[in-house]
Image (tube, rainbow, N blue to C red; front, side, top):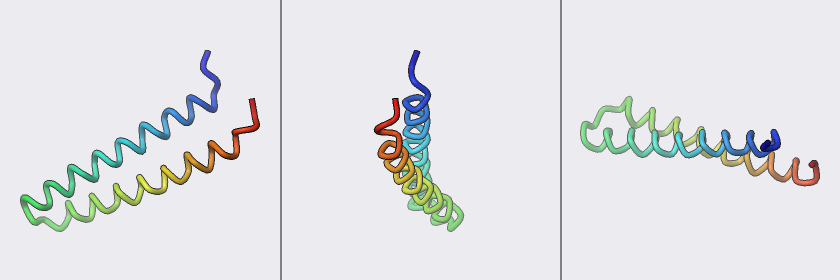
Length: 67
């Protein structure tokens, strides 16, 4: 079976990709409609993606030596 740390990295990476997709979608809708709420939603999604990216790098480095 897949070790727990790789499963964790997989799901965090999937969440990161989801936040990027949501941010792109929200900014696209914002550019079409001009509704501020979509810009806020896109910004929040982008910030969440950055945090998740930083976390997965931190987790990978911390767990590198652990089998």
